Length: 295
Image (cartoon, rainbow, N blue to C red; front, side):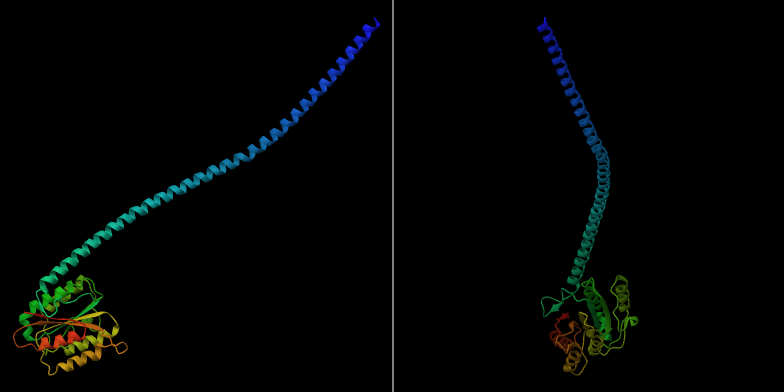
């Protein structure tokens, strides 16, 4: 009986100890879980607080960049369209220039191509300034229509120049308002000059020396690239050498020895000899030009 009581007391005590221990373990687990939960919540809460504004900022920045990219694309499309328009305009201008150049070349071939020249290439063109020196004597009246067509053809062979001038063989200016200046090159001024030339009659001694001297003294010293076209049918001067010396005096650059202007001669034959042709062949030869004789 005693042994049984001892066993019961021992069993109850053991159960109490186990129960207390188990209770302590459960309490510790609860405390540990509560601590972890607080930490996790704290971390999660902090993360959420920080993450939400970052996402909003990134989303706003992306929207802004997309908007700017859209504007850039629209601007690019606009510029591309404008570039296409400019290229089309340039092609049209090139086409018009080519057409005018071809027409000028055809006119030149029609009016000058039949000239009997000692140079097979005809009259060179291409200088930025052109001067015509024209014999206005009575003998040229019979050839005046050909004078005008020849001058017009040469002008058309220069579709664009920086300036032009028309002077008589005696040094008189066709358009007095542009004396010692360049006539501006445009459709209006060309038309006015040609119309004025139609009925132009001024004092002439059938010698180009005065006209050449006026042109070279006034324009050649300006260093502008110049072509001079001398149109005439006779030379009444006493000496060829006097003319060539005058030309040399004003057309040779003393520093370089080069000729300032190229001089061409165009002769209109009327059956009284070849003094003009002889003179202008020499003048043209010495000054980089050519002589063309019309029959």
